[in-house]
Structure formats: structure tokens, C-alpha cells
Length: 484
Image (cartoon, rainbow, N blue to C red; front, side, top):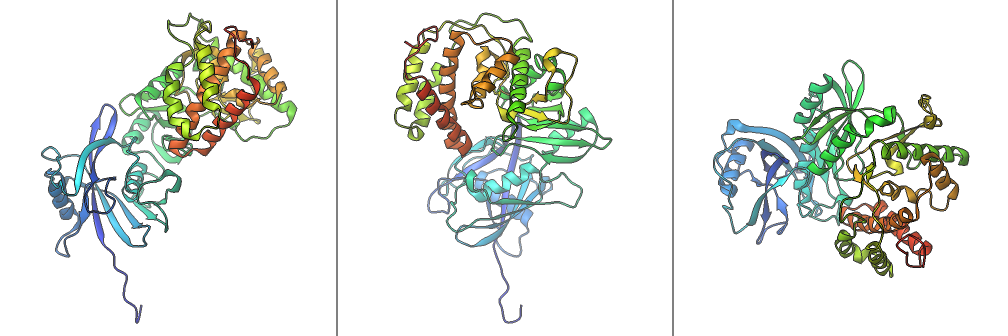
């Protein structure tokens, strides 16, 4: 360093004021306002050290009182994570994030000149308009990391952008939770169910709301632990695991434990990898789709069919909302086509309701060529497959489970015929009509969701399905499903 000036940088403190609710843990956020950096974005209460006389804990206590009015005992401050950050402009700083679960007073906007809103936010549903630096710290904290890097590049936005996420977790050598593992409450819940765990592996899908881990036990064995995005998804998955999943035997996970407050489940591991992206020989493909049809039949026949509730049918009530959200991303003519289908849906005869998976697509079907299928039942012959991800499971018409599968057999009549052979019957004309309408509505919903949440695969699939449906169903459908 001879002849050069040593690098120096500011030190920040960030308050993770945390409270537990029936909907899950929440943290206090404030919205920056006025002539400050990142005005209009949500951030944790935070600030800088006043000078060398002040340590980071005392600085946190002071900033908390100045910004929110709450009084914190330094003994209640817990180290959460340290983030080394570089802004898009190139300036760097070190931020110490602290968790506090006990305090005095109710938070209020104590500095209205730099803050115009303050609210509690769920840790698993943080607002979109957040400072990226703050979001990086909360993501690292949620993952159980103790140190993280967040070096932004020139041109990056100050606001968090899920498509340009620069956070990098640094592994911990202290024996604490793996950086990729869940928080302590989920670990405790899991170990009560299956015993001590020695390794956590993040197996979440590459989307913000997915939180799934493989947990390896100290005495052997492996399980999957899932924390649901909301209470509705949790209730659906638990119900599906308790009702129709047992009818599939080894072809579905088994529920080991569920916690409604944590919205978490522990399930058994099933072998295989998702079918999405797997390349198979044509004859093998047909055997796989025949097996998918057999699994769908077992799901749908797991409980007696029942009449559809009054007023049920295709999800036409959501059409306007989905079209409004997707309009900027649709192709010319898409909206008119969907509205024409919605108009026809009012005349469809109601279909009987059965148990459904709700999100039956190739990425939720596991394939394992090395595991033999159960020979106990005739429909189990063929390759081993298993279904996973039951968080959208609920009663509905059987064709609900064909909506996303139909994209997989587009242009391959042999695969559709193989599916029907395993399913044991053809579709009725009314089912075919509802399948077209539901597929169109699902595509619009996918385009809207994918555009907002940075999921280009979902957007592309929606466009592809709409184009296919428009090419195949140019004529309006009759109430029986026949083209007029």
C-alpha cells in the first residue's frame, strides 16, 4: 500500500424489527421521501454511525428511536447479516443488519421530512418497490446467511429488480444454518418431525415465491421441506396430500408433518427429475404419456365425482382482470379471441367435479428410468413417474388437469392418444370445449403473471398456447363443443 491511500467506506446499520403473525413473520418498512437517495422506495429503518465514538449497536438503537420512535434495549439486539454493497454509481459501503423482536412503543413516522409511509410487510411478500441494497440484506437474512455481497453494476436500477439480482451469499463456517437453508423456526419444525438434519439443499424453482429444500437426516434419509407463499396454497397442498395423494402410492410424496402457522410441510422424497426438458425416444415418450394418463385417472377417481356447484364453470369472472393485466403484452387479436370464448362459456353444460392436481405439467412430474414401476396394478406398467407440487390442488372438472399438459402434446397426436389410452376414455365434446376456454384463460393469466414477476418462460408459453388455440379454433364453439 506504499504511496497509496487506504480505501475507506461508510458503515450502515439496518433495523429488522420483526413480529410474528398468523400469516407469518413481518418486518417494519419505511418509504423514503423528500430530497433523499432512493425517494419513493421502501427500505428498512437505517442510518450511519455518527463517528468513532459510536459502535454499531448503539447506532442502531439511536436510529430506531429517531426514525420510528421505538425504544430498544441494546441487550435485545441480535446480529443478522452483514452486506458489503456497491451502488450502481460505484460507491461501496458495509451494512450491518440487526434483528430485534422486543421493543417498547408503537412505530410511527418520527421524521416526516424523509419518510412518508411506514408499514409492516410479510417477509415472503415484500413490496416490489424496494431499495435493492435493502432487499439483498433481507434475502440474505431469510436464507440464514451471515455475510453477503451485493455489488451492483453501472446501469443497474436503485430499485430491486428480480431479473438483475446481484446478491451473493458467502458460506458460513460457524456451524450455523447453511446459507441456502430455511430460517430457524422451519429447521426446528422439521427436526421435530424427522430428527436432526445435517444438510439443507435449496431446490426451489427459479422464481421468487418458491421456497423448497431437501433436508438430509443425521441418521440417513432425506425429506423435502416446503414453505408456502400463502395460507391458501398451504391448505390446498395439505388437503391434496391427505386425500388423493395416498391413492397414487409411491407415485406421490407422503405428508410427514404440517405447520399452519409456518405454512410449512415436510414430505417424503420421491425419485426422479422433472420431465420438463427431458429428451426421450418417440416410443419411450408414448409410454411416458400413457403413464401420465394413468396417474391422472387415479387422481380423478380417488373420490366419487360430484355435481358441479351452482355458478361454477370456466374462470370467466377473472377474465377482465387477467386481460387488463396482460393487455400490453398480448398479440393483436388475442383479446378479441379470448372474449369470444368467454361469451361462449356461459352456455357450456356444467361438468362433474373430481379431485384435481391443478398444475399438472411436465415440470411437476418426476421421471426416473432406474426405478421400476409398481407391478401390483396393470395401469402401473411402464416407466416410473411421480407427481409433486400439490399447492394448486382442489376439486374441479377433470379437464383442469389437461390445460397445461396440452402444451406438451401440441403437434404430437400420438402423445395425446397415448395419454387417453392411459386415462381410459376419450374426452367428451363438452370437456373439449371447456379445455379450449380454460387453456386460453390460463394463458392470459400466465402472460400477466410472467410479465410482472420476470418469468419469460411463462410469458412465452402463454403466447405459444394462444397462437395455437387461435389457429385450431377460429370458429366459435357450440355449447357441446362442436364448431359452428
